Every structure is written in structure tokens, then in C-alpha cells.
Length: 437
Image 1 (cartoon, one colour):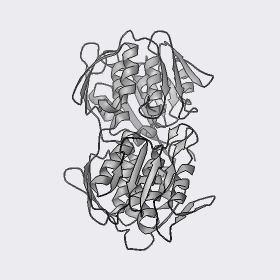
Image 2 (cartoon, rainbow, N blue to C red):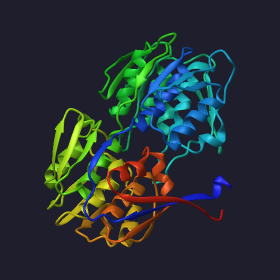
Image 3 (cartoon, rainbow, N blue to C red):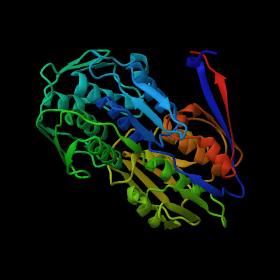
Image 4 (cartoon, rainbow, N blue to C red):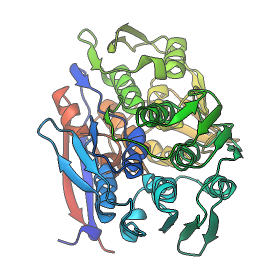
């Protein structure tokens, strides 16, 4: 079978009694990409635990392998990675794999730092609006790299090495997360001090900073919009446990509120409450009830919810990656709710799919307006990763069976998602289908 023609369809039967049980949040997908790229910065072996088993992560590991990294899966499930980049000539990652995932962009900073050269096609990923890397390239130029942008690839050359500089990374909607991480990967081995102004403050950036410090980097201002990096000559290996995925955690909260059992709560283990304050604030406004004890959350009530308005913003604002799943919860709330996405204003393609299921949703003046609805099963299509998850949630609360085309999108960001749903009592099946090219 040709993989290029393979698609997946999911079949979800609407539940009657509600989901119940315990679910454990996997390691952070978005934080794993720069952490794995950081293994290129040292000749020492690196150990990474709690890396989620996702299709995108498999591609990232394959890319490291294409650069000569020795990769070994340990008995405890962790990964041992030892780079072969240093002192082995100019390495170029597999161009075909680069275009498959957005996380491949981090190879620019990591390769430039240690071999003074990086060449790769433009990175891939879900398509839901413009996500330029101009800020990355301007930052690399400030560090002393010569940047060449060709129609099909990017080439970075630093013949005299990288040197510290002041770099402003503010964009139209705040600091760039990938840009901040990419410049960090390059600056830790640059000569002198690099100052990043308007740095992104997302937990994934903080986790990368903490990892680099453990490797021997000198970074000040971690968690703030101004980072100062004093370059060092070498970095050492590390052993790191990936933090819980805050987007997956938030998704399980929304699933529990939409489809949880009335008297037997869903329990979420590994819940990073310190990173989801904006979500919890909105849910409190809606009338949701939960109990938090350490990293364990119990969903106690999601009935009679009130309409509200959500503005997706850079951290610590409401996460753009949760606005699609949030729309499903809003369709169950009394009154008219609104969602504004100030990061990706075009990220409402899923609205037409929810309409097929009977949702009262409209895009109006840059906002998604949602009224209380009775959802019914239908054939729909995932338009990206988070939209796909929203359709899964809608299928759980809809009457009848929902069939989701292109369900493979969900595999890019949620580890063992269908298995976790089934363990909570959901009726979910998935099968492969062949489609014409």
C-alpha cells in the first residue's frame, strides 16, 4: 500500500451515560521539538524521558537520524541520543522529512550554532494561516549569519562564527515562540552576549531555557520577555523529563465538561495547572466545577454552563490551540458565545464542519459566534490537528454516529488518543482508507 494515498477515518458513537475514569496527560509535543534539536549542541549522550509517541515526533527522530545521530530506545521508554554533527563536516537533514513537520524549523538554529551552516527546505505542518519565519532569519542575520532564501530552501552560513547581538522578536501578535527557541539554540554557543527583546514566555520556551542551563548555558530572565544569553564554548549532555502537554491537558478538561459522567468524574493526572490559568478562568466564568489537588484534576460538573467570550492570545492568554475544542463546549452553553483568535485569525475552518453536525455557528467580523445547539452525527472532515480533536469531542456529544475524514491529523498531537477515549468508555473506531492522489 502506498502511504501517500492512505487516509484514516474515525467513527464515533455519541455517548448516553457519559465518560468516566482516569486519563494521564502525555509529554509535551511542542516542547519536545526544540529539546530534541538541542541534542545537536553537544557531543555527549543525551537522555529524554516522557517524549510522546506521535507521528510528528517519529519524523523528528528520523531527521536526527539523517544527520547521523545515534538514537536508542531505552527499556524505560526514554530515548538516548548522541549527535554526530560536531567535527564531522557539514550535515544536511533529509529534505523530504523537513517538509512534513513544523518542528523541523529548530534545525536551523541548532545546526548553525555548531557547524556554522544550515540548509533545508521550508518546514511543514498544519495549514491554518500564515506562519512566516522572517523573525527567525532576521535574528540569525543579527548573530552574524549570511541568509539566502531560495524558492525551495533556506541556506544559512556563518563563516566567522556567531556573535552576540540585540534581537527584537516582537511580531504582530507578540513574541514568536519558535523564533525565540530557534535564536536561543543558536545564541548559547555564540561569542558574547545576546539579548532577546520581546521573547515569547510560553512554558515550552521556559522548558528549553531550563534544559540549556542544565547543559551549561548562561541564560538570564527566564520566563520574562527579555532574555540575556552569554555564549559558552561547549555544552554537555543532559537527562531531561518532558513536562506534561498543556494543550492535551486542556483538551481532556473540555472533554470531561462536554461528555463526562454526571456523577462519576473524569480524573486527569499530570495536569499542569500553573500553565492553564486562562482556560480555568474562562471555565469558571461559564460555571464549570472541578477539584485540583497537586497535578490531579477531577471534573465535577459541566451542566448548565453560561455563554462567554474568549480571546486567543499569546501566553499567558487563552491558547489558540484550544479555541477549536472550546467551540464545542460553547455550543452546549446557554446563550451566545464568541471566540476571537488574535494569533491565527483564519483558524475557523472547522466551523463549517460543526455546522454539518447542527451547530449554530457563524463567522462574523473576525469572530466565531456560537449559540446553544443540539449536535447530531454527520460525515465531517478534519482541517487541521486541533480542528480534528474538536470534531472528536463533538462526535462524543452528538446523537448518532459521526464519521471524521482525515482523522490522521489527530495523531500529530495526541498520544494514543483513541485508546485513552475508549478507556473512558467512548465508542471510537478508526480505519485506513485509500484515496486517489
